[in-house]
Length: 245
Image (cartoon, rainbow, N blue to C red):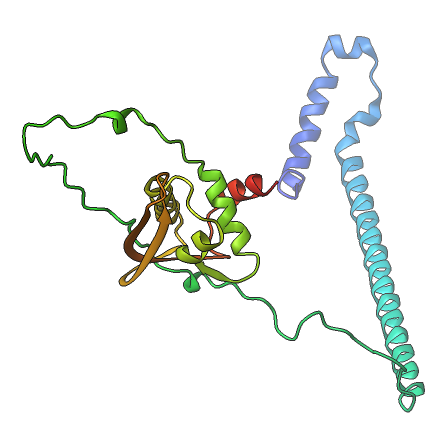
């Protein structure tokens, strides 16, 4: 703006305006002669505008300073009131329980406390058929299909864990005897394999005893299987809940 309104530019603009006003077409319009000094009016208006903006800025700054001072004063008054009340009740302790805590320590569940991944138990199956002779072998057992309800078995585990933090498979079966013999025992092993929190200890052995449909006593020696309350999987937990209901 200073460059455009320099004395040289002012004289050049005045000269151009004189030439425009000298044109016949412009003289016929009879324009206002004050237009010849319009650039001087611009300079005066610009100075007035700058002074007005400076005054507004000063007023705004003063307003903000006063507001900040009042807020700081109010904060100091509140602090003095708190200090005064504290001095008044310094020698008068409150009666009864002043504060209560639900527990002495927070319950912390750390990610590193979770057990490492353990691959599921892979049983060794011998698919070779032993033939002792040419006699006929009854095939009725191949068509005698037995349905094992895994949800019912998960419910048995869930109910056993309501009374303790962990329970072994032998304890579960002792409370809920096997109804389908070896098939039901294999289903229990499947639940333990699918549950990342269950422990299958190959170093320790346990013996499961049951009575079959003919009344004969059967037993199976297998690794120790332990179920934990907080480690049961979501699928087994929901199944157990459905079985309980």
